Image (cartoon, rainbow, N blue to C red; front, side):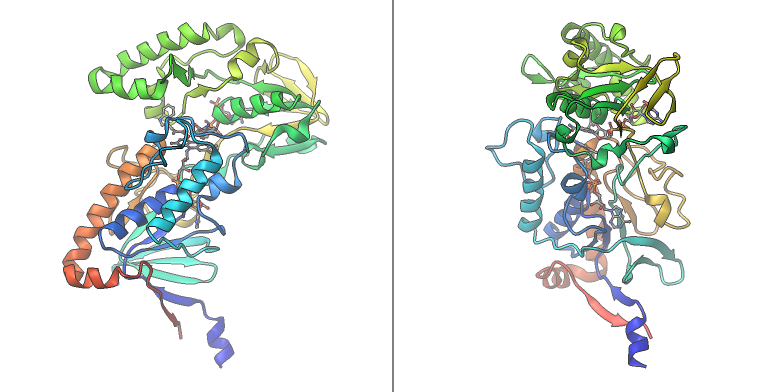
Length: 411
Ligand SMILES: Cc1cc2nc3c(=O)[nH]c(=O)nc-3n(C[C@H](O)[C@H](O)[C@H](O)COP(=O)(O)OP(=O)(O)OC[C@H]3O[C@@H](n4cnc5c(N)ncnc54)[C@H](O)[C@@H]3O)c2cc1C
Ligand SMILES: NC(=O)C1=CN([C@@H]2O[C@H](COP(=O)(O)OP(=O)(O)OC[C@H]3O[C@@H](n4cnc5c(N)ncnc54)[C@H](OP(=O)(O)O)[C@@H]3O)[C@@H](O)[C@H]2O)C=CC1
Ligand SMILES: O=C(O)C(=O)Cc1c[nH]c2ccccc12
């Protein structure tokens, strides 16, 4: 009988919120809660913090907004970090952040299902090992939870290697190879640039229009300029200024095959989530012919690709720089707060709070600055409820330990 009981999933009651995901967003909420005297538990599917950064990004990656726009609440980046920290520096910052707030996620816990039980008024969160129950559920699984792998006609026939950018580390294995890079967002541009540095021959597919802005303009970040201008001027005017600035540094990019959308770059980001490319060198490599721009792919063949203009080129490898998607619809059940794409229906700045103790962090389409905004709001909101039900004294006692596990077997 004992064996039988052990086979039952363990059931854990969490006094504070359950946070799903130990990326920057989940950690930021846990830190803000801890700072307000509220304990929490983070469930993370991988074995590390910030797994997107540690496991699914390329070596050359640097943050592309100045560091003060990417800071998590309560702890700035070290002063000696450069304006655009490297991936390794960002990871070390996140690790120090977790250590500073004594955040210890429960690793290797993939949330398979989360459901609100109207009778008990509690959230039941199921992982492969058991069920965690709490009054509050914070969704922190990210806008980039799963790679988008499009169903391109003929892709299965291709005999060379096919990788998504989430599995690409560096161009070292592609030297002298002809590589088709599908997609021209920040990933497609930066991977194409990296391939050039390793003497590979990238061809980048641009099937649509795209905004490319210089990352910096006379020593000032374009993003910083945009944020400052937005304090004073309407969005459309700011976009017009950004485009003037882009044309003055990058020139007209139309003849390179990079047509601009009709909607301005920041408006487009706000409305559709499509991030403008912040150029870190790809444009000059396109201009010099090192990165070739191609039209949309019609179909992939055994050894190459046919394009919509009738051109056919042979390739050794294909890299899919086709972006990412949320995975919330796979595991959050019966919820009307999210769209079928797994993004909150309510736009920024009101997308952080749902019904019945549901919260979301990091779904603002505003990168890490959106994360910081959400995290503070969520922690303030939960703290008010926590104080009402627990009172200041009990909160002080409980918080000496960040995570509270009350293990018991379901029987
Ligand atoms: C290549 C790249 C570069 C970027 N650079 C910048 C930048 O310079 N500046 C910026 O502001 N933003 C940038 N971003 C945006 C990025 O979204 C943020 O940097 C940041 O990682 C978001 O943090 P997050 O915690 O919301 O999501 P993530 O970092 O994706 O963390 C989510 C966590 O949830 C876990 N998880 C997912 N599903 C489950 C589940 N079912 N159960 C348990 N755990 C789960 C994941 O394993 C992951 O650890 C970049 C994104 C990419 C892809
Ligand atoms: N240094 C940094 O900080 C970096 C930041 N990032 C960030 O990570 C996030 C994800 O960026 P990224 O990975 O570039 O993804 P994006 O979603 O920004 O871009 C995806 C690209 O793939 C194209 N695409 C999608 N499906 C297809 C298809 N079936 N056929 C052809 N093309 C297709 C899209 O074209 P279309 O527009 O036509 O749909 C688009 O060009 C962004 O927020 C970005 O800013 C990424 C890299 C570096
Ligand atoms: O890097 C990203 O993906 C971001 O979302 C950061 C970001 C938020 N708003 C922007 C506007 C222009 C360029 C990058 C961003």
